Length: 117
Image (cartoon, rainbow, N blue to C red):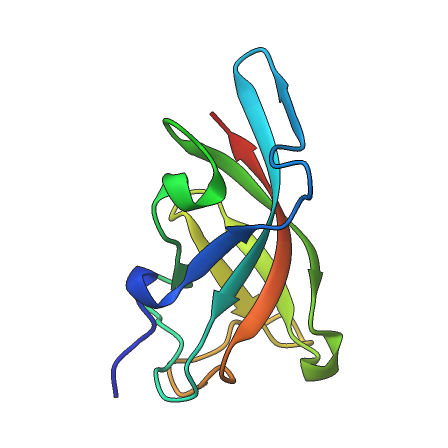
């Protein structure tokens, strides 16, 4: 099986006014990150789900940080942004990371605050 790649992940601006704020060349946007097709597995190298280009988050030059605001709590998983690898990592309740055997459900969604420029 293939692993989830950045090409299968989408980020859509969900704030009605377009950009949430712009200050000192920094931007912040509310985005809905959608991933998973019910077939591809969770990537273990590099660890986490690769994100699409910064332009999909409404940024011009770079995505500085992604703060996860809300996610599907029914699956009992914990989602964190990996700043070093620029990926979203998924952990099970006990604190251990998911393995490559994990197949995320089709069209899983995470609401995030994207900050960058």
